[in-house]
Amino acid sequence: MYIEESIQHYLDDLASARPIPGGGSASALSGAMGAALASMVCRLTLDKAGYEEVRPQIEHILGQSEQLRARLAALVQEDIAAYGRLVAAYRMSRATGEERIERATTIQTQLEGAARVPLEMAECAAKLTQHCQRIAEIGNTSVLSDIATATTLASAAAQGAASMVRINLRSLKNAELASELETQLASALRQVEQSSREVTDTVGRRA
Amino acid sequence: MYIEESIQHYLDDLASARPIPGGGSASALSGAMGAALASMVCRLTLDKAGYEEVRPQIEHILGQSEQLRARLAALVQEDIAAYGRLVAAYRMSRATGEERIERATTIQTQLEGAARVPLEMAECAAKLTQHCQRIAEIGNTSVLSDIATATTLASAAAQGAASMVRINLRSLKNAELASELETQLASALRQVEQSSREVTDTVGRRA
Image 1 (tube, one colour):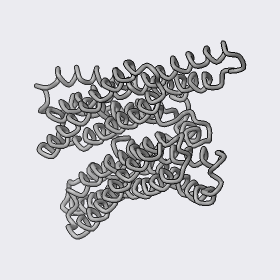
Image 2 (cartoon, rainbow over the protein chains, first blue to last red):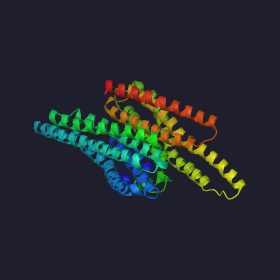
Image 3 (cartoon, one colour):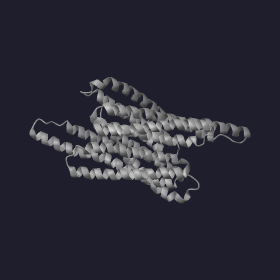
Image 4 (cartoon, each protein chain N blue to C red):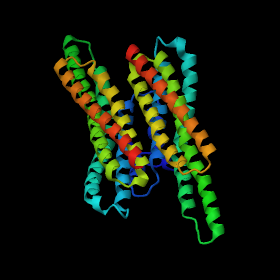
């Protein structure tokens, strides 16, 4: 589990010629950092005099951002697993006609899996940017630059993951499923864009 | 050194109520991941048949992206140190008039330091996106989604770092210095934006 190993080890493996970990996994880690920063700003608001009124709301958001952080941190590894299964599928034998059919079916199943994992990252990032928007509105004004950065990292997670979703959807033969997943992705990206814009405006006004 | 500790430990400390590590450090790590992914795409191009002609160029870019990765990874920690020195300056005694002057001068020095570190991140990210642009043009087409994600992470590093530069420049009393650093930052951000656009176009055309 990379999450339990050193940052240096992760970066070295990311830079290596092995295709995993790759962009999906790194996007998930960017999202987990965004969630961690959102949690930090929540905690620095809970501690601060003058913010007693927003305490219940901030406590609720903190619970949500910590859940998203845990999920995004888990996706760092799940993306590696999903991509590993896809690579294994491509390496299946195609000596007989039966094997070729088996291989083609497995590839399609694993392509869907390798698309769904980064899609979930984009959806987590979308929820996270919505929380960032609320934190920007009511949180401790002296750490709003951190909520701006949290939103930037969440947005990068969504966009980075989107590249990975799309590359996998392109080889998916079930056009209906591909279109459904593409629609879900577009919806998450729209949410991220809208919330990011709101965070920028709010931070500009309040900070 | 966080870089030698686990990712989980870093994320937990990022999420904690202590203001360091904060957004600057996380931005540097996002940039280091971008550089690592750029190196991965270089290596997957060097290994690939049909790309012999671009080998010398890719080898050169790989050297550069690995240098930027090392520098950005070091900045993960340097940002924490710079911000720690700024916090220590704010906590200096102001019991006497002399102490107040000493404190005010130290704060100004440390504000500059706390702005220069994320500024360097933005400048590293700008160089990185230029390399990504070239990799997108000549690299292995089957991993271009990873260079798109590398660019996204580098861009997030620059934008996240920019929030941190600006919050520190705002309290800087030397207006000439503040303006000079703001100009440097704007130039780095322009480069990032331009290269990011080129990467999107090129990946769309070649992938």
